[in-house]
Length: 186
Ligand code: SF4
Ligand code: SF4
Image 1: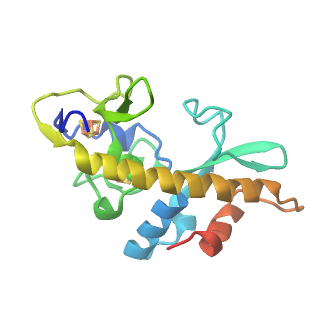
Image 2: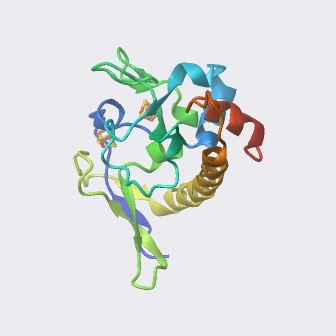
Image 3: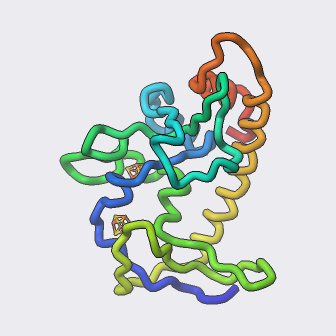
């Protein structure tokens, strides 16, 4: 492994919880439901390419219904950010079980020319102030990254099955019911 730390400290600007759309995996969703008891239909939404320009058309997590594309996201309160952000205390109310993507933000995996893992750095274009006055250990980030890779693969497999299904009243919300039945190791 390369660098053992990334020089960064979160200054709690809340940019990532107010301005960024959070895209959980089905596994993330199940962890939140288990912890909070909130129905996924309450906190999930299905957004379209008009709502999010950062996700490539080729991304394997686009759900297809009647010729349209949707992607699963955490709902947001108008002007206040993520469904799980407490607007008064300014904290994440599901911090312990927040999606892995939230844990990895704003870190970016760095690889060698051969595609081998090297370390983590900071994303350049994510709007997070890149303060270097702290030290974040790389090892837990790497473990979270590996865990997320696994869940992203399961997610893509489920979406593939969903997209093959054809029926008259198909809605993106049906995906929730489907992954509740099929996600391994819930
Ligand atoms: S945008 Fe960066 S500094 Fe602001 S809360 Fe998120 S991680 Fe912390
Ligand atoms: S789940 Fe928590 S950490 Fe993630 S965007 Fe929402 S409030 Fe922020």
